Image 1 (cartoon, rainbow, N blue to C red):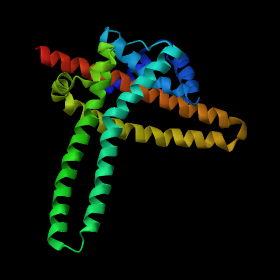
Image 2 (tube, one colour; image 1 turned 180 degrees about the horizontal axis):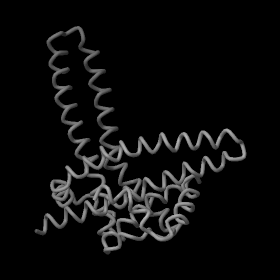
Image 3 (tube, rainbow, N blue to C red; image 1 turned 180 degrees about the vertical axis):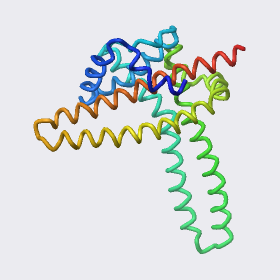
Length: 230
C-alpha cells in the first residue's frame, strides 16, 4: 500500500499531461489551494475502486473542496498546537510570578510538565487522525463528519501503525527527492531564461506529493473500514 502510493501517479496513461498542469496550478497563489481538493478527489476515486486513474482538473470545485480540506487540517492539527503553545506561555508566566515561593513554583512546574505531556500525546493522536478525518470527510461528503470522533478513532485504532510507518517513509523519500529536485532547480536557475522552468519543476514536485498522500489516505481508510466490518 505504501510503495503503491509512490507509483500511483504513473499508472495514469495521461500522467505527464496532468503532472504538467498540476505543476502549473501549484505555483499560482490561491489556486494552489485546490491541491487539497484534488487530493480529496483521489480518495473518492479510490473508494470507487479506481486506483489507476488520476482525477481530472476541476478548478473551481476542487478549490472549494481544498478550502474545506485546509479547514479540517487546521481544526485537527493547528488548534491543538495553538492551545499547547498558549498553555506553555500561561504556565511560564505563572511560574515566574511565584518564583519567590519555591514549593509552589515547583508544584506548578510539575503540573505543567504532566499536562504538557498529555497535550503532546493528544496532539500526536490528532495528527495521526488527520488522514482518517480527511478520508472520512471525502467518503461521507459531509463536513460535519469530521466530528464523528467515535467512528474516526475506531478506524484510527486499526490503522495508526500504517499511518505512522507511512509518515516516516514518506518523510525520508520526500527528503531525498527534495535534494534531487533542488539540484535540478539550481542548475536551471543558472540560466535566467530557465528560472520559470525551475519554478514549474518545484510545482510538479508539490503536485506529486499530493497524489502520493491522496492514494495512501484513501487506501488506509478502506483498510480500516474493512477491519472494523470483519
